[in-house]
Image (cartoon, rainbow, N blue to C red; front, side, top):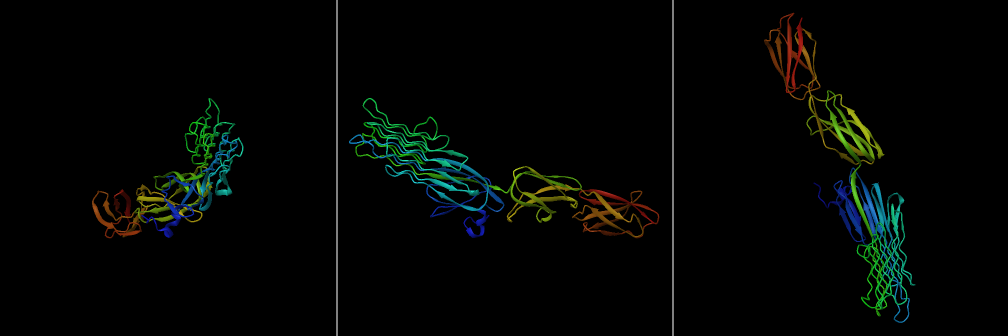
Length: 439
């Protein structure tokens, strides 16, 4: 287990995001998504871990504009609502190491001040921009902010307008699906009500994140409300709030959701048991994949590379790979895959094992004088016992081979010429026999 805060030694295995004042490490285990929220401008820095690439989804809200300036005279000095900020979403796949500048717009602070633009300068030269909402100097509400660069581009809602002796207009909303416009201020029954703020979604007034502020009224509840973060436009001033002002728009926001994935998506890895085991594996997709190293072990601890199989570099289509081992050991064989990126990092996958029985006993010459040579196929890593019998089943000689991976000479002196014998070899995998003749 690596010490979490040794930055230099294991920097390449971490993901960081940087604000102007802080360096915050984010640890990823290969799959779990992590969310980083920017409420002020900074840089998003991504360093994928060894053998990994990253997928990111970015959400950008522009800031809301403040409620408008006074448009009446005397006590008829109502104001329109500010526009909501725009909203953008986009996903990027196979993202490598890089620094991505983030701008978070500031909401309009006082009447007549528009909201600031928010942006994310992403991979592939693509920049996401969510414009700030406007702030009006007329009875028409401020316009919603623009939205560009995303797969979803939703302009902010327009601020609500106002008429003579009305309440102030509601601010425009900012958010996914549809950013509603703020409602206009209204006049009726001697009470001029403020317009409701626009919401994130169709048919909902002023109840969710990114809502515009409610405009002030002429008589009841005269105070306007600021926009709700992220990106809601500020409510316009109502005529009943003699000393009041229009309210501020909400600041923008940028959210980055990161999933760190392996450089390949391996859907299967299997071994087909036989005298010559067949390894077969399938990838669903590959990113930056140079090759696979097939490694073999006799004990499951010490591995040796036995071949390399070229990868597809980058592909979004399934690929099937296979390799046949023509020189396995007798007994249990262990295999594993090591996937190597083009730039060097690698990932080692879990071990698979297969049992290979002793397939043959090689003995020569079978017509012998005083000795024969014995070899097991495939090679066997343990000591084995052997015995020589005559045709009546009598045990004539016995012995033990300590190194059964090499050819062994068996001394068979003192046997009767012209006689037939059976050589039996005993392993924990079974018994093998060969017929021999003494000339």
